[in-house]
Image (cartoon, rainbow, N blue to C red; front, side, top):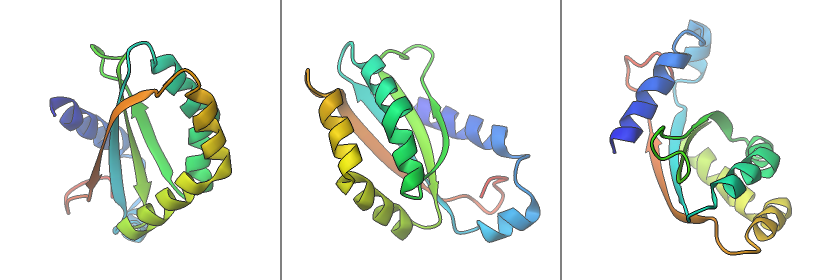
Length: 136
């Protein structure tokens, strides 16, 4: 849990200067999703490859804005955390549905898991910015 809080803090601080006030107003209803993946032993390289070569492009295709990807310094070989942004929670649900049904994703997932599943556990947490958050 401490990793999650640190990632949120770092993300918000690193992006705080990027948005202009006009952009903040137009994005005031955005929601963020923080996802944490725990891999099976020895599978992080496969997960990295899948994100690098397939997943990231498919996120963009389906309207999922990538904020960033991180690995805890002491568990970089077993934990991946990333944050996505959407116009709304409903848009997130619609994007995930389209992503999960995309034939390109289904093929990439199947190909990357020929030797067994990569992800042991996945957690998702939807976040809404506070009224004092520099990132909205």
